[in-house]
Length: 257
Length: 231
Image (cartoon, rainbow over all chains, first blue to last red; front, side, top):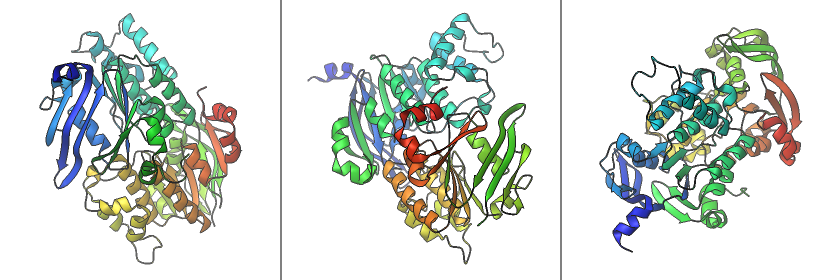
């Protein structure tokens, strides 16, 4: 396989990616490829470096070593907004939303970007186009937030803000969707709905997911990476991960069925 | 042992009323509070801790009336709180977080917290801002335990923790309960909640909708859908 033909088919390619914080090696020599349209789940022990890895891919932190390619383009030294421009959208483990705006207004911010509508002054001119209203209604319906559309984000619950985060990322119409623990803080039944939503996403979209809930993590994934202490501990299919004694010992615990 | 008795509590934010008269009692048996998103679980926890004022009703712990008391006094009355979203101090190290609470004659020591969460011992010189989400969660639980609470109020302690850690936490809490620790647990993780609590109280639209046994809820997808599903 030549380099160029490989690159064009890869949404994401990491090679020897490392990140140190002072004396701590948070991410150590991680390499993997994600083909266009695939779903990759990253699991691992607490403090393994999963969120740091996300931040390195999204461009929140610079790399200490290694390289990252997005759709064949070397973005190792590119800032976060360049990577967003290539179609990377992400959610955060802890919500980063506009607290003083309503649920729907938050979504407008993301949608206006994606639809190429006026970006400057949207706060002072909140009149929304019909298209914005329609699109936001559709997305809020997908994440079960329609009832809360006109509630201030400061007044919605923690779980609802997690659902809104997913909606915000979807509104960006990403080519690569990165979700950091989307099932955390939402009820078991809502988790089921989240799995359905993730499964229903356009096959053109590449999805990278961090998740501790195995019912969500394995249901969605084509491929799973297990991290431990900054390193890649194991890589495999959901079935291989499910049946791995090493993963059970390290991460799942003895009672996990 | 004192009972936590919540009677007719109403609370909200600004003009929005979230709790519409909640009645709940926690005695020696651990109680799990579950329900869909936005039903008022966290608001109730904050009302107990005096972080969000109640507009009606009364909360008592034993002989002490908690309603109207400052949060510090509520903590001193014996309620240890693990807030949702961790709230650790970014610039304090793990060790500092725990040491400032260490008291002679307390049952909980820094050493015991490190035994409960060995990962925290590995990170003890790291500041709160340098911890991963799951590590912050462990620290928030450890910090609450260091106050030697007679009643432990936890708002989604399993959130962000690896499955093996959740299992370990569940087993440790079970041991504590056997030694008389009172627990009010808010959870979305049914497996974790049911492993610790036989009694599950469902909060819906700011009211107690039902009290179910955890074994029944675990067995029945219909009940789960009814109480935890999307309306």
